[in-house]
Length: 122
Image (cartoon, rainbow, N blue to C red; front, side, top):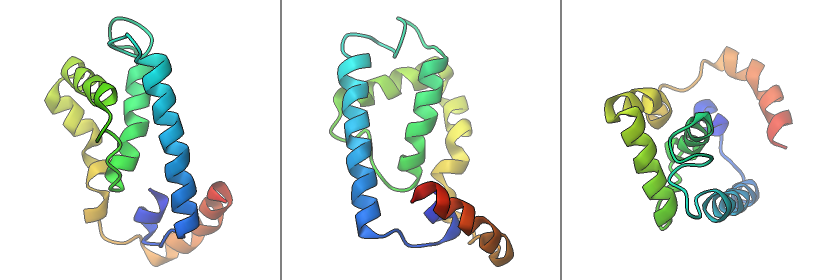
């Protein structure tokens, strides 16, 4: 998301490594936590579900369809959305899902942010 926000390209190597790590994480989420459960830690929605769905919406906002081809994960997302309410769910994720439509970051702010962001992602 930093790259999208800053309008900076991501190296193919970094993108491949990040997507591979995401794939492993999603598999664990499905196999360990959503195995037979409606939600991550309880039979009803919890803070764990809200935190996890927020994290997963970031790659969606960057154009990565994390729920595609993952029926357990997609069903869980629908249950979370239903539990929160469709309108509130959309409002909560509106900014992140529309980040590509925002104007590029201010060049002065961008220059101040880049060193810290690069340090985090390298």
